[in-house]
Each structure stands twice: as structure tokens, then as C-alpha cells.
Length: 339
Image 1: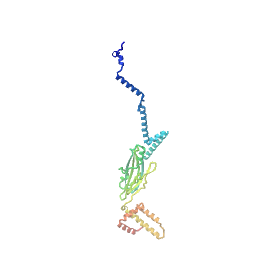
Image 2: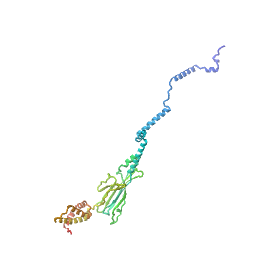
Image 3: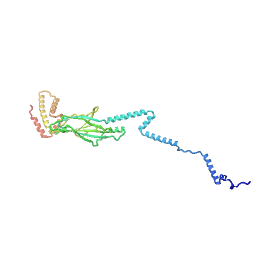
Image 4: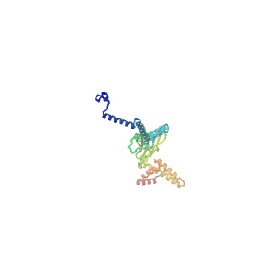
């Protein structure tokens, strides 16, 4: 029997046979498979677990950086590591409460009381209030706010001003005022949120026709005295719980020379007679001490409206600048007849 030719092979067998090109491609593919099987398989580095670990490390580093860049967070973190976080929070609470109490103390409202008494009692009294502002509202931290509230007022700012009414401004002829009581004079006030302070000064001017005026400046800041000529500064001082006072001892106006001329002449005329009497006693051998003589002279001055010898001396100097008056009056004193 003869062998069948290729042309006569069954179709399914022919399909199983490979061409030369196909056989060569299959050989190369097999080699690649063998080679890949021998080479270790490379695993990917950025797997999900690796990414999670990197993110955790990065967040931890950022968190630690934030913690140690803040003194408060750093202290809190250290306290947590040592197991004393509760104690640390209690200390923080106490510190905050202390600052709140200190802010309340620094910003407490203060009011003073003062009674004005003076002579002559028909004088006109002008009372002016000056209001200054210390604004600390821009600070949110209690410590910074407290530091701001402790500062002095900027007195270069223009203060609010107002006149305080009083009975002396409405006097009619021959009317007098015994005294002017001033109660609840504001020294310091705070806003409702205690972030703004208002501090007050008071200027008091007492004047009368024929007299030199007296001027008083009342303030709660001892470094804020009014050093202008003619002004007397008085400072509010706490004398008890919510009791603030100034050392005001009255205001007797010094008369101008012409106003005091008649009293001056009367005082020296009275003194001339007393002086002669003292001289006569000494000539008679009686002892009259210099202290007694000085006391009698002061008594005569007081009786004629001069509170002190210094006050009398000012008038004496001013009046004797008029040489004609001084010569005429001295001659009159020598010739007076004492009873």
C-alpha cells in the first residue's frame, strides 16, 4: 500500500502541523518563558501597606513638629507622656482663673469722694473732667490682654471733656456756698467685656474777684502730675474697700495787693499799738519773750484776714513797691494815737 501524500492528509491533521515561521516563533516564546521562570519576580515597592506606613510617619512628624513648636502643646504632651496630664490641666485651669481674677482687679471701677471748701465763699468754682481711653480689645490671649491693661494711658491723645455742674456757678449777689460735696467722681471705669479702660482726671479752678485763683489737678496716676505754674496736683489714694480720697485741705484764696490794702493797714496799725505796749513793759523791767511777741503778731494777722505770716509778707512786699504809699503809711504809723 502506498503512503498518502500531504495533499491528501486529512484537514484536521494539516491544521495541527506548523509552518517553519510558526515553529520558530513558538521556540522563542518557550525560551522567554523558561528565562522568566529562572529570574526572581520583582515585587512593587509602593504597595498599599507601604503607602499607609509612609502616611502615618509623615503625619506623626508633622504632629510632633506642631506640638514642639508650641510651648503649651509641648508641655501638655510631656505631661501626657509622664502620666500627669490631669494635674497639668488642673494647673492650667488655676492659672486661667488667676488671670481672670487679676483682670477683674485691674479693670475694677473706681470712684472717689471730695468736699470742696474755700474762702471767700462767694468764689466761682469750675470743675472740668478729662476722660482718656485705653483700648486692649485687639488682644485675645488673657496674658497679653492683662499686660495691655496694666499700661499707662497715652496722655498725648485728645481726651473727652465735660464741665461738672455745681452751686457756685449759679450764685446771685451776696450769696455764698458753704461747701461743694462731690460724690462718685469717676477715677477709672471699664467696658462690659473688660477689654477697654477709661481713666479720668479732674481740674478744679477756684477764683474770685480781687483774689489770686487756686488751681487743683486730681489724678489717679502719680506719674501724671500737672507741673504747670500755678497748679497743685492731688492724687487719689485708696483709704479702704472702694474708698478713694485725695488730700484736699481747703483753699483760701490769696487776696491781691489792692484787695488786701485795707486789711494790711488795719493789721499794722493794731500791731503798732501792741508793739509800743511791749516796749513799755520791757523798759519797766518786765520780761516779754520773743515767742509771745510773735504769737501776738500772728493773732493780729489772722484777725485781719491773713492766714499765715508768709501770706502777709507777700502782700507787704507788693504794696511797698509803691514807694509813695509806703512812705506815707510809715509816717502815719508813727503818729497814731493808741488807746
